[in-house]
Image 1 (tube, helix red, strand yellow):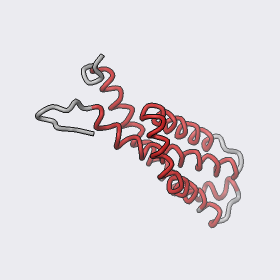
Image 2: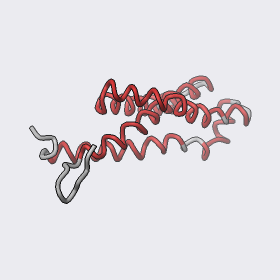
Image 3: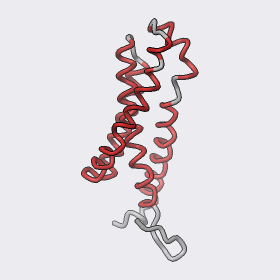
Image 4: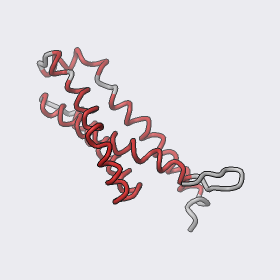
Length: 139
């Protein structure tokens, strides 16, 4: 079966890639609007609440190169599922957090998902479109 000719498969991949590519950055920037509430709820100082943003970004920085190697080893489907799973698990953990440690660890898990998604999305997108004379997409 040609993956380019199965319309349902192509549109499903486009939908998933689009949704996750939007959801991942939204996870990164969901914290700043609610910082005062998080400070009160978890009794955090301004310096400690800054870790909520820093841990997410630092995780992505540390995993940037290894994520590429993981992608090469596992392929885009498995790496994409790891990204989606990390984003869902991290967001769910953060939503149900009862302590500062739990919410900080959820941000690390979300950062892992974002790092993997940053590698998967740009590589997977061109594979959805069949290369033709009018559309010379090549990998």
